[in-house]
Image 1 (tube, one colour):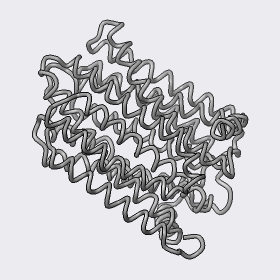
Image 2 (cartoon, one colour; image 1 turned 135 degrees about the horizontal axis):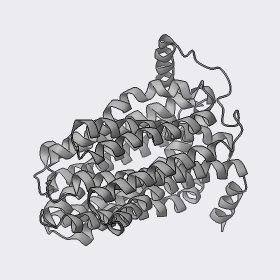
Image 3 (cartoon, rainbow, N blue to C red; image 1 turned 90 degrees about the vertical axis):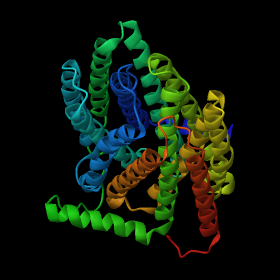
Length: 429
């Protein structure tokens, strides 16, 4: 009842509903985009993805803009964040048109990768802006509830978008024409998200307070300032570290799951069956995230964010990894689904807690920079996990030793975080 009451309080705010709608529509479009590319590149009968190719794809998509991300964060602390949401979504629509043109040409090489890199890079800029904007439309204890609702709902919207995209592709006849149709729908979503953002006041979402210079030197100083804030406010820094450790493990399991459904549970010619199984696995992971989002606000009020994050990591490091190891060795798809649910639960629990701790401990005039750094760290960690899998996994995805090592990483991280949380720290740390 308490969680439902808190949720009603958050949803009463008209401005929160608008900000929330921007996220839902935009991330639904991201799901459509990803479904189109998955069916075009990774789940085509003519292409058999190996670990190195998958790792290269993720590195191309995540790493370059992750490095640029902190510089973008400085501008989130200078420009009207409402205007950023309007213009960035419009720019995503425009660049997706370029992706559509590349897909129409049948090119699945470097040009496609570069085009998608631009779209997803802008998308991560939008997500950092949404996170930095949230404290301007909710406050106090409602912030935990809002952090549970918004990223989780966005993740679910992307997952639903992926499933809808796969369904629509089949309905219009499949093939490259189906992928092109899904991309057209994604373009429409980005335009709608930008329009919704125009319904908010220009100065509503900040930034308020001191604004950094937008010169190159100012960007560099802002980057250093953002790093400095994490050193001063160590509680926020530790929270980000926990999310990073989870993302390393998640990167390993993401590639492992993809390889298992593509090359172990199905033959190369059964690309559609593999795509369907991967969609189901994504759904189970999203379901775990949803349960975490529902339970996290109440649990953090009872036992605290650090304790709850530690518990979530322990269950993923034991139950989640154990069923993943058995499922990959047997092999058994049902156990892989259980592992996905467990890892999804842990990921959302620690992300909700970490977002809230960052928002509560970092001053607003540095919040955009810190969230952009947060985004960079998360993406680099994900690429690191993907790279580990590329180097150590066979093409079948059956790598129980690697999965076990990830379980140890999660358990050690949980122990460290719990121990540091029990230590008496100076005020503000």
